[in-house]
Length: 405
Image (cartoon, rainbow, N blue to C red):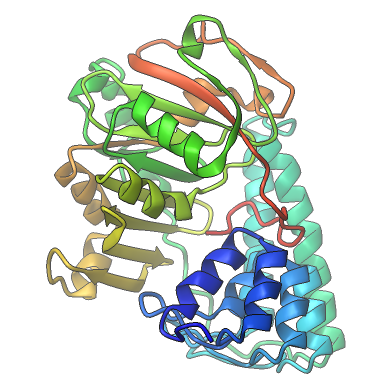
């Protein structure tokens, strides 16, 4: 029988990696399916509901509690599925008897689905206004709209009542201007990249991984952890053809941190942050950002141990813990993105979200596209490598929400 205290993390990691067979083995071995992560308070079914309906079905069949609530917001797995765009998971949970009218302090699954549908539709309009209707983000967001429409229909058919809730809390309209102003961005283009620290942003929804190690060591460790079909070094000299499971490992001149980014599917590599920090005995940061949802999250690890974690959405701190300092979440809510900017400056790191648009123009973000780097202007890279990783053991087939955190 496994150690129950270890079960939440091991089971959660297997779900996060969409390892259907491994999850099945853990179920057979007697893992506690309803154990919550001590750090963030969610159970395996919460994550599965937002990612993989096959795992949802297995967990339900094995007796996982479909009404279990996470500690941060008190939400059931149906909330996670509805907000994450997992229409198949919503249907499975409803069929299993999930309460479609479950409430946390201020919202319901139906309300969350409507909110995300509205944000998806606004994001489509935004992309159309910027003539990005041919981009991957546009295609994924159109899929998300269909998913949320299906979720809403399923919830209503199952008896969800129309929400009698206060007006939706705005995801603060100035969110995408709250890191740096447009003037700051223009001014930054006159500076050398090695002088920049903190966070600055362009429009988008991104997941990024930073490792306090040279790019070659980061790439080598990632290759060992995930397996790789190929590792192309210094691709800025000759270009690269994007693949379905590829990622860039980059390092700016004058910077100690390397950055890992997925140009095709914008995968977060959240688990790899912890593993790389342990493998390389260094610090690593997983950073997720959405100007659409008004949300950001970071996890700071050192030598495999979590040092600090922050999750922020729609003006509120959803979760914060730190072994480095004691801060009142209300102070974070007051500073908002300024708090994150200061955090990255303290780490001597530039969170260059703009690297996506600099490295990968929107029209060239699909697998099979050939990229050259003649368009790179003021950015100065110390190194750009490209790794074609082995595909996940069991790719998820659930949510298509492009702003899922």
